[in-house]
Image (cartoon, rainbow, N blue to C red; front, side, top):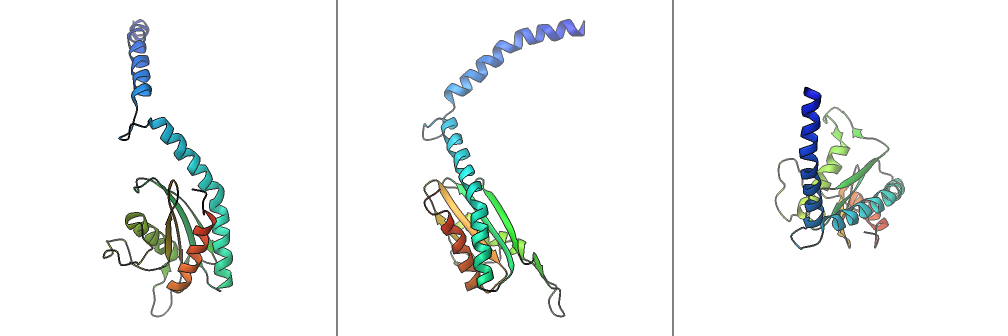
Length: 182
C-alpha cells in the first residue's frame, strides 16, 4: 500500500515541480532585471580568476615580506560586486602564524590580525586603519591592509607581522598582482 501511494504522489507532484522549476528559471532576475544565471556565471568566472591569481599574489607578498625581513601572515580576498555579501580568500604563513609569548606579551595571532584588517576593509572599502570610522568590536583599526576596486568587485590584501608601513607595502604588492584581472 505504501509503495502504491508513493507512486501516486510522484505522479501528481512531478508535473508541479517541473512547472515550478521552469518558471523559476525563466523569471529569475535581480533588481536590475538581469537574469540571475548570467550574474552567477560572471561570479563563477571571477572566482576562477581570483583562485588562479591568489597563489601568485601570496607568493609576491611573501617575497616582498622577505625583502623587508619581516615574518607574519598574508591574506588576499575578493569581494564580488558592490557590497560585501560574500568573498573568496586565501592565506599564507610567511615565517610564523603567531608571535610570543614573552615576558610582557602573551603573543599575537597574526592570522586573526590580518583577517581583522581584511574585515574592516570589506565593510569600509578603504585601507585598514584609514580612520573612515571608529573600529567596531572585532576590529583593531590597524593599518596594514590595502583594497582596490576592480571591474567586477574589490581586491583585498592584508599582511600582519611587521611595522604598519611595511605591512601596507606587502599588501599593495598582493593587490598589484590582480591589476586589471577582476
